Length: 210
Figure (tube, rainbow, N blue to C red):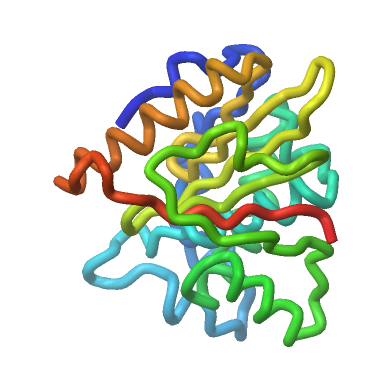
């Protein structure tokens, strides 16, 4: 996959210690809570000795955190610690809900866990462009053929844009051309890897603070 060549080397928070936290996988049983059955479905099994992938949960959890202004969700210097100590646990629970961010938010609301975000619209697109971005703080959950990532930002002077790729970490951009170039390259490479046509559309759930 592309290595996000345009991302800021100083502002990004790539996952460098996957041997500690497991990367894009459910936590180990020893890191989990006794008596909770989530890992019965998301943890280690014969087909997945490292645990199930939790990209759906990581993407939704990051969108929720980012839109709620959680500083660690957009600070590359502390992102990996945030992922290690908090986000991967929340992500595993959210991934256990299945489907995508719209149903994740609905499920949490049904459990009386308010996310304080709203899914503004669902789009099917070949390419995400500036015209799809609403004013103010925004984020989007993206489904790219059996894998999920998230993006977000806020337009304005000195704005920063982000890509959260669950296998890579947090990628930060101060130039929107660089952001769109890396996002486009990532989706194109994913499409190619899955042997899909160049016109195959990905799913985008554009979200805003409630």
